[in-house]
Length: 259
Ligand code: NAP
Image (cartoon, rainbow, N blue to C red; front, top):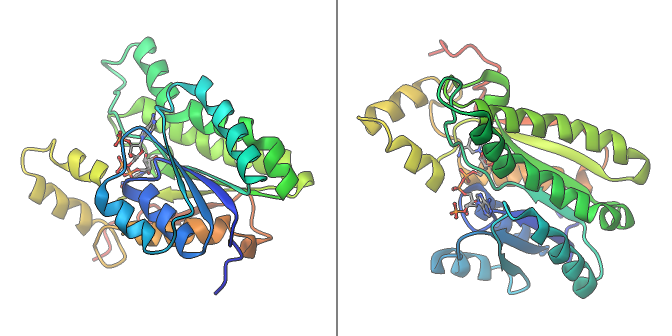
C-alpha cells in the first residue's frame, strides 16, 4: 500500500534508537523525509539501515529538555524544506519516580523530561501543520491507564499525552490536522533491555512479563509499533483522529490470566 508520504517532512523525536528508529526507517521506506531529533548520536548500524532506503533525512542533536531550542529548529526545517507534514513525539523514558520518595521538584523535573517537549514541538510547528493539513502521532505508555506502582511522574506524563492527543484533535479538526496516539505496553528496545537489567534475575522477570501478554506471550516488536504509527500518521488514515491505538498483544484490554 502506498501511504502517500513521499517527500513529506516528518519530525521523529528519539528517532535514532528503539521505537523511534523503527519509525524513522518505516518513514524512509515510504520515501518520507525523517527529521530525527535526538540526544545521542546515531549508531553506524542505524545509519546503514536507514540509508538502505534514503539519504534524504536529517539528524539534529538536541536534548529536548532544553525546550527553548525546539522552535528555531522547526522554523529552520520549514524554511529549508518548504513545509512540515508530521510530528512523531516519541522520546521519553520511564524514570521510576515513585510516590513515596519523590519530591515535587523531582516530579516536576521528570514531567519536564517526558512531557514538555511533546507540547513544545507541536506548539512550534502548529502553523506549518495547518498549512500542510498535517498529522501528529504521540507515542505513550500503558502506565497511563494501568499504573505501574513505582512511577508517578512517568504515568502522569503519559496520561497527559493521552489528554493532549484528544485536545489537539479537537483544537485542530477545523484545520484538517489529525492527532492520534499509539499506546505501547511491552516492546523490546534498548531502554527496555536496560530496565530489565535492574531486576535481580532479568531472565525470570522477562518470562513473568511475557507470560502475561495474552497474544502469543511475547514482546511487541519495534516494527509492529512503527508500522502502525506510520500508517496512522499517513494521509491514508484520512478520517482517523483523536484515537488511542493499543499495539500491545491485548495486554491492556484482555484478561491477563489467559493462557
Ligand atoms: P529508547 O530505546 O531509550 O529510545 C528513546 C530515544 O529517545 C533514545 O535515543 C533517547 O536518547 C531519546 N531521548 C529520550 N529523551 C530524550 C531527550 N530529552 N532529548 C533527546 N532525546 C531523548 O526508548 P524506547 O523504548 O524506544 O521508548 C520510546 C518511547 O516509547 C518512549 O516515550 C517510552 O516512554 C515509550 N514506551 C516504551 C515502552 C517499551 O516497552 N519500550 C513501553 C511504553 C512506552 P538517549 O539514548 O540519549 O537516552
